[in-house]
Length: 518
Image 1 (cartoon, rainbow, N blue to C red):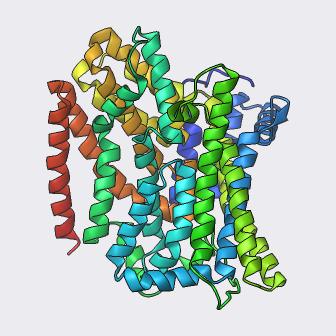
Image 2 (cartoon, one colour; image 1 turned 120 degrees about the horizontal axis):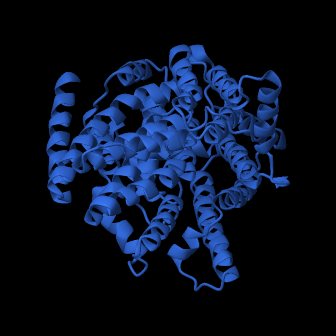
Image 3 (spheres, rainbow, N blue to C red; image 1 turned 180 degrees about the vertical axis):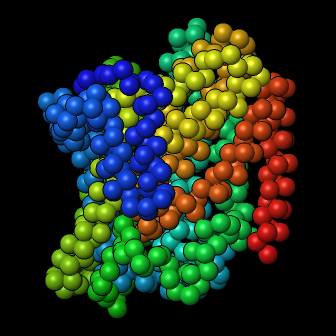
């Protein structure tokens, strides 16, 4: 790949800026991402048409064929999505989704309880954010639909549970990745004997954005704090319009599916439980194989540090599909209905797959332009040390927003944060690392090119830009609280003072939101 003078420069910001601004202004996601990609490949090719075309071909080909082999990560994630679409459709065809909605209707008596149930499921299903968004969305959607909760609100409930829970859970794909990164950083700076898990646990109360995003989510569910575009979506949902029908069917939606009258709730619960259990098993098994190959002792945390996330999701979903098919056939559903469910279920995921492919493409282009590296370099100027936690939060947020990846932001910004702490005050290393984690989740929540945001839209069956725009005000509120909290932490060197400051601001924010939403 040709690296030009535009790499690691301010112009490297142009592709994500073009894509994000156009997506917001036109609400046409694929067109906006496509124009961002074209802008990027022209920058990579020094505005040569032939070089741009070559770069585009290499990038697109790399989505399925990379380094002389199939790109198993991408293909397995896409397979996971297609299979989840089939499972969801078969659960609907069997009548199990309706049976679950009827069963839950007897126990979940209002909108508030339906929203709290969704949050609870999101907290429980913590092993991976992709998995969380899609699976919890499939379970919760029949209930939230029954109580006229908009798909935009459901997408917010999914997205603002998934990443914040995963980033503070050590036994998750996120936690394992972060622990592995932090372990390498600590070893590089002479802290090889420090317990990596204990360090991760110490950082949890310093992750202000994750903590207060979850708390705000609960308050929104309890008090109906619908602000900005979310208010309009909730008002429309009360009239029966759960999503903007003028834009067509959203990703993950299955229209005109036949439904059997003999459905039972076990037809929903058993496939989902098997899916969760099988995915967990494959994650542990693949991690155990990696540990064994390197002659390392087995541990759950070690297994998650070395797990194959994409293959575990794919094979776990295959087991879930097999169970769903067995239950559907056992229910004596007519084969034409079963085949219709499989076909429409797979088809329902195509809009999400298209967006995801374009997002992966622009992420590769942005990576080749070293946009993240340029964003990280902004933190190395003459910034007062006390301001660094807040500045790192903001820069990590902007980097994740521009690149669409939290994990990539972790990989770029965490080593820089550690180097800055060691160069000034090593006791501030953990707060500065936590600020990066916190900021990356914030940027991910706001970015229309983030894969986790895309999959939250898919899990909720919500139009993607509607989800981005309705979640944005809540994310910004928590981000402002977090920045001030990190500022106080930096000046006082006290995590407790930072938490107290955030808590006071959070309470005031909730009171203010209650007043304006009366």
